[in-house]
Image (cartoon, rainbow, N blue to C red; front, top):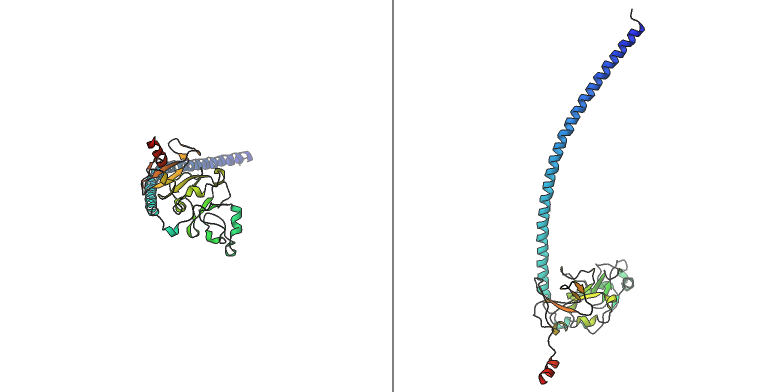
Length: 271
């Protein structure tokens, strides 16, 4: 008959066999999983390479689409500028002699008619929302209340105007009086001459051919004329020396010279 010690040894032996068997099975499974992971890593690497290729292809297509869109926007702008160059009828013209006003953001809410009291003052407003006579053509409207960033202009038929030229002076730098305002005036600069720079922040006017300022220069017809204190030739503002820039429909710029003063010329000839 086996002793108790012999039975315990047998149990320990069998237990060891079970543990070794379990270890071997687990080891085999680990190796299998490791091989699967390794193969998946290769697949993932291939997928990542393929993805990078697709991303590159997508970026190239995006660049082409953006270029096409930009060219279309430029072409559309050219067409708009050509139409804008047509002089308004005399009865459509506005008085340059009436000085413009600046309407603060806080004041605009008080101008709202009862039926528009729930409207928010922003870039999408229309001057028809305001009580009659509160805002006049050419007035500056502050639609944001943060420095000059929300300055826009009261235009025809209640439309609020701002420059739409892609190559206009950066609005961060200052305000441009847009062509859709200036084309209805004969002397745009005079209309806003009652403001100091820190009030209006005006750095440019988009002028038509018939404007008084334009006619002081030797210009060609059928152009846009930007009267500005920004001189891109030296890349800085000079508020004491404004210049006229002649811009064709391809955005090519030239700098016309001032016309000679006829009175002074006659005096010189007499002498």
